[in-house]
Image 1 (tube, helix red, strand yellow):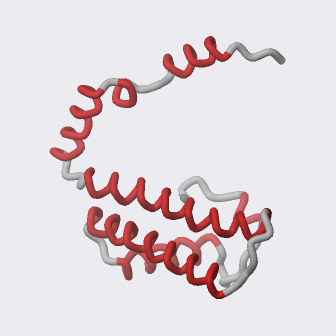
Image 2 (tube, helix red, strand yellow):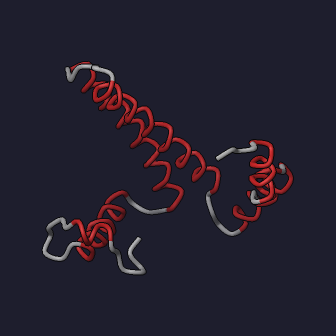
Image 3 (cartoon, helix red, strand yellow):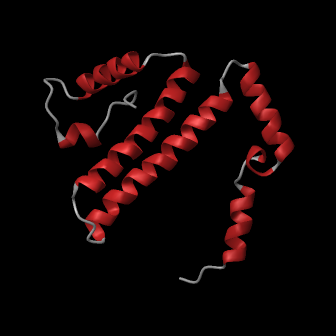
Length: 134
């Protein structure tokens, strides 16, 4: 298969929203979300940060698994530090959503209890989900 990257870029441009490509549209959308009550600046901080710090956490694991980095106290401590950074951004998200961390955990437990009645993991239930299971 031969790929024409220029044609692919044209395709990507055609299926990309205006808010993703035009600053005025982006700023207008941010304003719309703010007026709707979304704490969008804190949500963006949280979303970008959780993803970035989660990547740093995973980078350490990747190097241990695939590049021979040892399991030792220094790497354990580094993982804990990165996990703390993830939690800082989780706190940003809970503040943006005006919800306590306890309530987030409670909702997660309820979701998982519904998915795994009886409290045991089952591959089929993890792969085949009800329509409203997210």
